[in-house]
Image 1 (cartoon, one colour):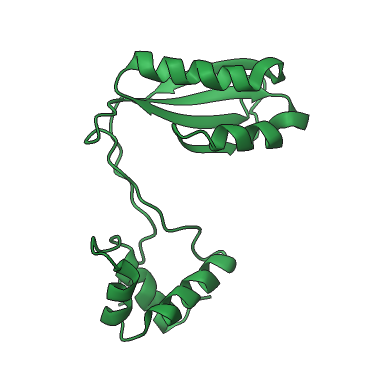
Image 2 (cartoon, one colour; image 1 turned 90 degrees about the horizontal axis):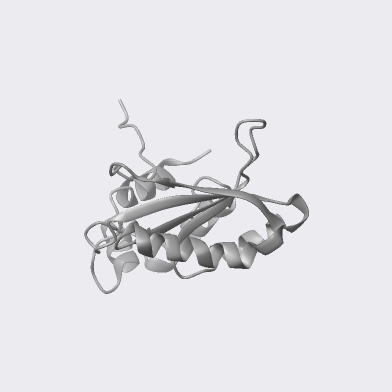
Length: 160
Protein backbone atom coordinates (compact mmCIF):
# COMPACT_ATOMS: atom_id res chain seq x y z
CA UNK A 1 0.00 0.00 0.00
CA UNK A 2 2.97 2.34 0.53
CA UNK A 3 6.29 2.36 -1.24
CA UNK A 4 9.74 3.02 0.21
CA UNK A 5 9.52 6.80 -0.35
CA UNK A 6 6.08 6.94 1.34
CA UNK A 7 7.57 5.09 4.31
CA UNK A 8 10.45 7.58 4.45
CA UNK A 9 8.00 10.48 4.44
CA UNK A 10 5.86 8.99 7.19
CA UNK A 11 8.91 8.19 9.31
CA UNK A 12 10.20 11.76 8.84
CA UNK A 13 6.87 13.22 9.99
CA UNK A 14 5.84 10.81 12.73
CA UNK A 15 7.74 12.77 15.37
CA UNK A 16 6.12 16.03 14.30
CA UNK A 17 6.95 18.90 12.02
CA UNK A 18 10.05 20.95 12.80
CA UNK A 19 9.33 24.28 14.47
CA UNK A 20 10.75 26.45 11.70
CA UNK A 21 9.13 29.03 9.38
CA UNK A 22 8.94 26.54 6.46
CA UNK A 23 8.56 23.08 8.02
CA UNK A 24 7.61 21.21 4.82
CA UNK A 25 10.58 22.67 2.97
CA UNK A 26 12.86 21.48 5.79
CA UNK A 27 11.39 17.96 5.75
CA UNK A 28 11.60 17.82 1.96
CA UNK A 29 15.26 18.88 2.11
CA UNK A 30 16.09 16.13 4.61
CA UNK A 31 14.40 13.62 2.30
CA UNK A 32 16.24 14.84 -0.80
CA UNK A 33 13.13 16.08 -2.58
CA UNK A 34 11.48 19.42 -3.23
CA UNK A 35 8.59 20.76 -1.17
CA UNK A 36 6.03 20.46 -4.00
CA UNK A 37 6.86 16.78 -4.46
CA UNK A 38 6.51 16.20 -0.72
CA UNK A 39 3.15 18.00 -0.56
CA UNK A 40 1.92 16.06 -3.60
CA UNK A 41 2.83 12.73 -2.01
CA UNK A 42 1.19 13.73 1.28
CA UNK A 43 -2.00 14.65 -0.61
CA UNK A 44 -1.89 11.26 -2.34
CA UNK A 45 -1.41 9.43 0.98
CA UNK A 46 -4.35 11.35 2.38
CA UNK A 47 -6.61 10.69 -0.64
CA UNK A 48 -5.85 6.95 -0.36
CA UNK A 49 -6.65 6.94 3.36
CA UNK A 50 -3.11 6.04 4.41
CA UNK A 51 -2.98 9.19 6.54
CA UNK A 52 -6.00 11.12 7.76
CA UNK A 53 -4.46 14.45 8.61
CA UNK A 54 -1.46 16.35 9.83
CA UNK A 55 -2.46 18.53 12.75
CA UNK A 56 -1.16 20.23 15.84
CA UNK A 57 -1.68 18.37 19.10
CA UNK A 58 -1.25 21.04 21.75
CA UNK A 59 -0.69 20.23 25.39
CA UNK A 60 -3.81 21.87 26.82
CA UNK A 61 -2.45 21.74 30.36
CA UNK A 62 0.60 23.82 29.41
CA UNK A 63 -1.79 26.31 27.79
CA UNK A 64 -3.67 26.70 31.07
CA UNK A 65 -6.62 24.57 30.03
CA UNK A 66 -6.61 22.18 32.99
CA UNK A 67 -10.25 21.12 32.87
CA UNK A 68 -11.25 18.89 29.97
CA UNK A 69 -14.60 17.34 29.28
CA UNK A 70 -15.93 15.13 26.52
CA UNK A 71 -19.50 16.31 26.13
CA UNK A 72 -21.84 13.57 24.91
CA UNK A 73 -25.23 14.18 23.34
CA UNK A 74 -28.21 12.13 22.15
CA UNK A 75 -29.20 14.03 19.03
CA UNK A 76 -32.13 12.99 16.84
CA UNK A 77 -30.78 11.19 13.79
CA UNK A 78 -32.25 13.40 11.09
CA UNK A 79 -30.48 16.49 12.51
CA UNK A 80 -27.13 15.09 13.62
CA UNK A 81 -25.20 15.89 10.43
CA UNK A 82 -26.33 19.52 10.38
CA UNK A 83 -25.95 20.09 14.11
CA UNK A 84 -22.72 18.12 14.40
CA UNK A 85 -21.12 20.39 11.80
CA UNK A 86 -22.21 23.46 13.77
CA UNK A 87 -20.80 22.06 17.02
CA UNK A 88 -17.54 21.03 15.37
CA UNK A 89 -17.12 24.56 14.00
CA UNK A 90 -17.26 26.18 17.44
CA UNK A 91 -13.90 27.74 18.30
CA UNK A 92 -13.76 26.04 21.70
CA UNK A 93 -14.49 22.50 20.45
CA UNK A 94 -11.19 20.78 19.70
CA UNK A 95 -12.77 17.76 18.05
CA UNK A 96 -16.24 16.36 17.55
CA UNK A 97 -17.62 13.30 15.89
CA UNK A 98 -20.67 11.10 15.47
CA UNK A 99 -20.65 7.56 16.85
CA UNK A 100 -23.32 4.86 16.94
CA UNK A 101 -25.35 4.53 20.10
CA UNK A 102 -24.92 1.40 22.26
CA UNK A 103 -28.48 1.02 23.49
CA UNK A 104 -29.86 0.60 26.05
CA UNK A 105 -26.85 1.70 28.13
CA UNK A 106 -25.33 4.43 25.96
CA UNK A 107 -27.81 6.67 24.10
CA UNK A 108 -25.24 9.24 22.94
CA UNK A 109 -24.32 9.69 19.29
CA UNK A 110 -22.55 13.08 19.19
CA UNK A 111 -19.29 13.78 21.02
CA UNK A 112 -17.52 17.13 21.42
CA UNK A 113 -14.31 17.74 23.40
CA UNK A 114 -14.20 20.99 25.35
CA UNK A 115 -11.28 22.47 27.31
CA UNK A 116 -11.27 25.22 29.90
CA UNK A 117 -9.25 26.76 32.68
CA UNK A 118 -11.70 25.22 35.18
CA UNK A 119 -14.93 23.23 35.27
CA UNK A 120 -17.07 26.36 35.37
CA UNK A 121 -15.64 27.40 31.99
CA UNK A 122 -16.22 23.93 30.55
CA UNK A 123 -19.80 23.93 31.86
CA UNK A 124 -20.43 27.36 30.30
CA UNK A 125 -19.22 26.02 26.94
CA UNK A 126 -21.40 22.95 27.34
CA UNK A 127 -24.38 25.25 27.93
CA UNK A 128 -23.60 27.01 24.64
CA UNK A 129 -23.60 23.66 22.83
CA UNK A 130 -26.92 22.73 24.46
CA UNK A 131 -28.38 26.00 23.17
CA UNK A 132 -27.41 25.14 19.61
CA UNK A 133 -28.77 21.60 19.86
CA UNK A 134 -32.05 22.76 21.42
CA UNK A 135 -34.98 20.35 21.17
CA UNK A 136 -32.99 18.05 18.85
CA UNK A 137 -31.07 16.87 21.92
CA UNK A 138 -32.82 14.27 24.09
CA UNK A 139 -30.07 13.57 26.65
CA UNK A 140 -26.57 14.76 27.52
CA UNK A 141 -23.68 14.16 29.86
CA UNK A 142 -20.05 15.13 30.27
CA UNK A 143 -17.05 12.93 30.95
CA UNK A 144 -14.24 14.83 32.64
CA UNK A 145 -10.62 13.85 32.08
CA UNK A 146 -8.94 12.41 35.15
CA UNK A 147 -5.43 12.04 33.70
CA UNK A 148 -3.34 13.10 30.74
CA UNK A 149 -2.90 10.56 27.98
CA UNK A 150 0.05 10.86 25.65
CA UNK A 151 -1.17 11.66 22.15
CA UNK A 152 0.79 10.36 19.22
CA UNK A 153 0.13 9.97 15.57
CA UNK A 154 0.97 7.18 13.20
CA UNK A 155 4.06 5.18 14.12
CA UNK A 156 5.68 2.74 11.74
CA UNK A 157 7.58 -0.24 13.07
CA UNK A 158 11.26 -0.21 12.33
CA UNK A 159 12.20 -2.47 9.44
CA UNK A 160 14.03 -5.57 10.36
